[in-house]
Length: 136
Length: 135
Image 1: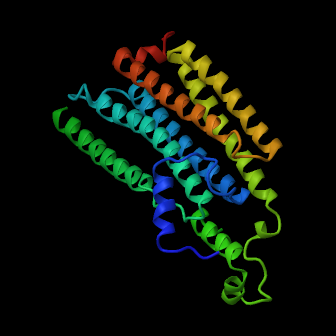
Image 2 (image 1 turned 30 degrees about the vertical axis):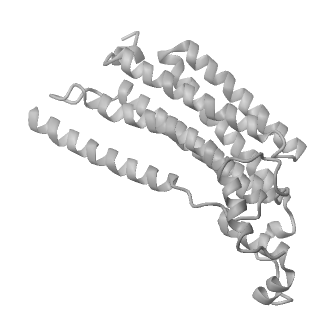
Image 3 (image 1 turned 135 degrees about the vertical axis):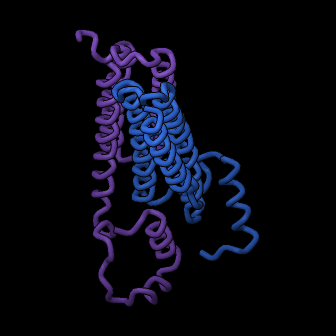
């Protein structure tokens, strides 16, 4: 089936506007399963971030001279876990809409967000260790 | 393995235009993915992904049991529910029909767990003794 130039933006807009999931045609079950697995993988990542945050706050000994250090690491990690879970759901819906309309899945911002967040957290952790060593 | 996006484009394109697909791969080219002949493996992988997610919930529930037993027990119950949902999805083979609510349930659960974790971190403060009440 050939799509006209006018039809493609129309379907994309419908997908982005969160049109009903019954619109379009039923996609190949394999794509639906792949989309579902991706959603589950993001949620496991979100859970891992929450666990990491909890572990930092509850298991790590306090940084000498920086009593708020553990909270500085734990709170953003847990918050990022909550954000990732919600974003994964929106992304699953967006991908499913795209599949139903025969469009390629839209580009996901989640990997970039996760990579940037982990990099920032690593830098903060390094700075905290250096700061606490200097203040000891 | 081909990533989901690339796979989707490839097979959707084949579905729409068999002639183009033959032109790309040649008429006698074998299927480049075993799932071209057996889509059941995708279902199996998805079932395993649900199981891994349930195990992740169980692990978090076990960890939370030490600090907040009520929240930990709830998360453990959710682990069982999620495992059951994955089994139902695998059995019916209709992933999209009831997907939306199952996915929403997982999203809300993870968000709630995050809020509980935030409360534990902020309210329990720096008391590492919470984890070692008998020391």
